[in-house]
Image (cartoon, rainbow, N blue to C red; front, side, top):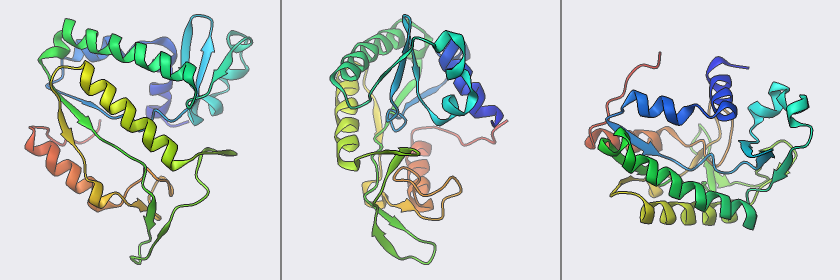
Length: 205
């Protein structure tokens, strides 16, 4: 497993990400709910995201997960958990140095069409969140819209970046074809909007 995905996985399991973020004191804080597509795993009184990295890690076969249960993303139970957590995150932002950051929402959506390197466009069919687990684009886009509206109502004022006219999946994307792996023009436009809000692009360490 690559170091960065594994680091994110460990942070999800150990629940250290928020404390690290507060300690970092960012100037800008960007929320993007595109990864809110995975099911959750309930383990005792904790929740973990069932990502491909979690499944590949082998952690699910360890004793700590022996009595775990899945909570499907598109379920009323997951909706209730998300609403509760959104309120907690909004309260955390207000009560910590994160409240001084410029808060930005990337209003992401799944693309309905893909474009090849040759410029040909076609509809996207047969979407899977994880291998063998099909997903419905319309249902997940409706969920994203609900999440974004709910979060906007809870949070301090947020800037919003989006590029619906450029929302095409890249059939030749380096991470594979997916409704949320967009064509280069999409990322260029989002970066243009972020730069206008004072976000600086830096080389990843």
